[in-house]
Length: 217
Image (cartoon, rainbow, N blue to C red; front, side, top):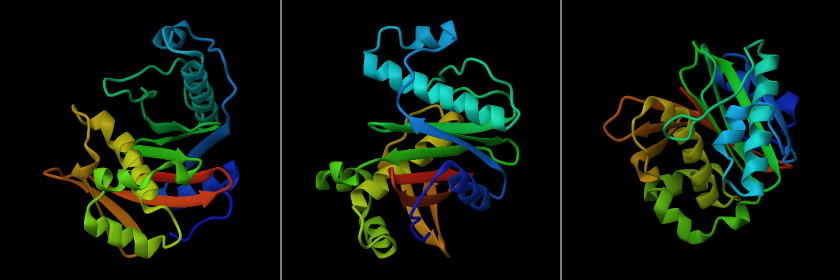
């Protein structure tokens, strides 16, 4: 779980592939797409403000780039009941963005059942009052030991957001972050849910675009 100094597309693909044990395909880039070739996607954000439309269209564009690298079917990527992207059959994936940058990842399913990612470009924007809303005392102590020079509230929030994205297609409810419990497992972090069999392995890396986290099961 040592921090990375960079997460270019190539080295992030390698890191995620090593992390999950199966090939993960990554696409990333600045928020700059302002249109979609698919009417179904345009309809989903037709009432949204321009910034939200750009975030949505950029994420979908990058997701199709990742799908192309995986030799998977490309087409409109619609939205599930918890806001999750609906992927082609046999694919799991996730999309994330922050103020200026976005990433999308996909992998084959099986072997993966769920895959989630999150990005926080500037962890200083996560204020100290967020901590008690997203983590338990034991998690604060654990993350402080693992990431002593980082904003622990931001780390906890981002890791748990990636867990939510990995699990949301399998749940019929929204998750409260305090329902997610982080624990150490050797050199890895593991997330479990209250009263649930789900168990995600979690990763946090730091690079030129900020804090990137991923979870899978």
